[in-house]
Length: 148
Image (tube, rainbow, N blue to C red; front, side, top):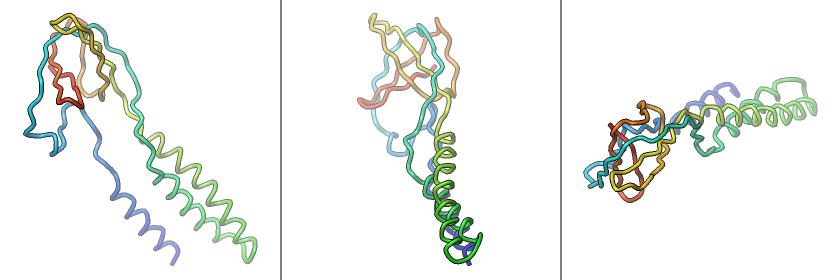
């Protein structure tokens, strides 16, 4: 019975996953909106890591699974103690898994606009940029992305 509950919990939490962001992917709410286009030249590109905020799903899932697994060991008060230890250990492991899964490679791209201004934009590393390349900066007032 506990195994069925654990599998159901995993299935529910898997539905909370969000698609990866990309400089080349637009969400539906970002379409059909005007963007300001500025031209410039790439000055430099620096590798960075982009960390997504932790949702707590990894910690909760790990704690639930660890608690269920731990409670299967022993009997009576021993079962309760191992369940608590399993929940704490599972929560810590789940937190680390979520933290690692929430990181992706990115670029900090510094662009010298034709106006002479410098701008630095950080975005996922899904498109390569090299110093000296001509690029476009697309801005909607909230977000800016660099494209070829």
